Image (cartoon, rainbow, N blue to C red; front, side):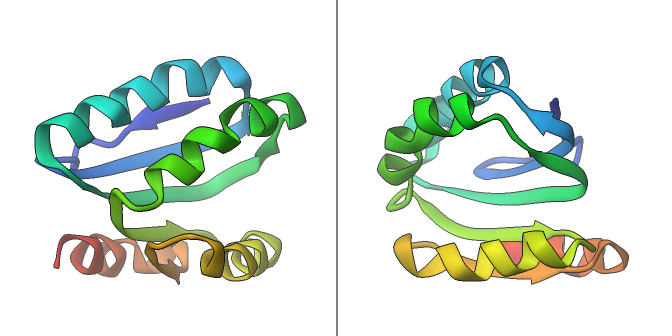
Length: 118
């Protein structure tokens, strides 16, 4: 499950994920991101994964083509997490995308917002 953070503004979107992301979650999130890209040409994303527990395999398979499509439209991505496994996977996957990615601990969320907006 996800929600859009109130700090989101313009082409900067904050997404807090709690629990597991399901295919149904992506069915509403991806069109929202499509609309922002249509309005602004590109986006910057802060993903707060402090309470993230993973993603359904079916959701990954269904959304992977869109994720690659978005990679050239996402200028920056800040990942907020205290989970070592999330940090590791983020760093491993980052080279496959054209996006500048940085990880921040949950205590650095203000710093993450500052970076993604700059």
